[in-house]
Length: 276
Length: 276
DNA sequence: AACAAAATAAAGTATATCCTTCAAAAAGAG
DNA sequence: CTCTTTTTGAAGGATATACTTTATTTTGTT
Image (cartoon, rainbow over all chains, first blue to last red):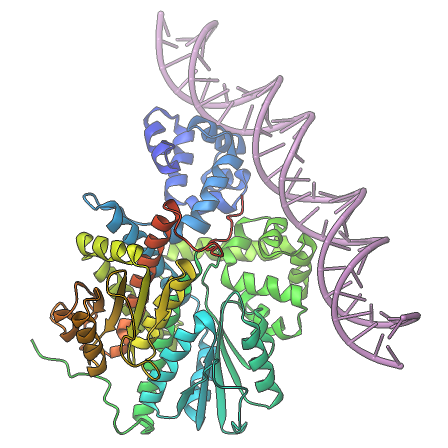
């Protein structure tokens, strides 16, 4: 069974002494405080002694303060992201789908929370001012590259997809008026890195969408957009969040392109809203 | 002046050594980890020594690890209290990204709520019992087809991608022991429909992932999985939700494949969980 | 008011964490 | 390849934290 700290606390609450209730209340209202502060400080905040805080931990069934902290810390760092509301009546299969797709929701939200204004701005500017945009991605990342280049080409008309099987090297891409967008995720394909290196040597501006600021390609890139994908989990997990990001980027490019008239004439991205 | 830890980190980032960059990246992506873990553990998580973590703190201008922790802890506790992420301070650009990505979150949630058990079950069974799986998608949908076939091939080893440019028709796919998965979204490519028709004539089972139960391919398909994508909006919107669905499907196939031993021998999908 | 029981705090010890110093390893220059 | 410089890791003392034990305060009862 193993109850959560919330359940344990609520269960014991009525039979606790006045001081212990203070601690219980604090734990329920500000659990993060327990996760990051030492027992003495938690006590000081609510006006009881360190001893009381530790005693409370024993009272609700933990080995000590450290023991409770361990649970809280893992909740704040891990479970928060994979937490899923279990609906009754759902079958195991649908529940499984729900679990995985909720994970995607959290990953998107997570990345949303740490978008970097400046980096995004630079990336958008670079794309909008380039006469030619090459998009590359190997293996897993090929799908991302295809998605971006296909849509970008539809919008601006000047993007092309680098095809690992047939294309070799960067051909004659003019360094001045072009840029290359490279997708690179763990495990980083060596070809991707080689391509980035070649581009850098030729002076072609590189934008990379990758899973860390210290990924191999980051070294060569001018603009690094890191997406947090928690690669301890299955590595398909990066898919939805990456596409979500690409789309947001595309939508921004559309908006700006509209106002400066640089969109494709054939382009008609929206279907008119029907009035209800 | 007194910059925040984010600004300090970004400012120093370029001149940091490789190991210190790892620490910097971790601080930017998972700051809460620094707030609740001791330096040694933070180092262990990213694969550097405790010393490096502390050295990094000095590098970006703190007296030590404790000093950085103090700032982080107060940030997390204060922000928790002010609750609802302050919209203030967010720029128009980040807000725009937030709007679009939130849309994806809602679309995923939406589809999650109307998954059909029976259809999913049939699709999974068909894929697991097929000796050969062909995956097809044109234009926009090519990225989905690539993603599914690439990963399916990695997991089961018997999937292949239909390449519109080079492949013509279904070749000699045996009708008995195979199936074809077709992605088809508005506006429905005529080639997709032709392919579906051909498959049906040859008696090859068809699974289609599409945007409506009445889409053109649905007529020929044996199993129709409709994803709600609300195509009044920009048509890139289907991307994240489709990938999220594909992933959930893949994960379910992995789980079942594991228990019946039909996964690829080279397959190793997870990285081991580290013990706390 | 006096005593007993419970609750709380202080003190002391063991353990964990931080941080400095120094040594090893890796990277770079000649 | 050798030497120098830079980067990284290991060890040990200083400090902080958790936990146990003992003392004090508070509460409740007669």
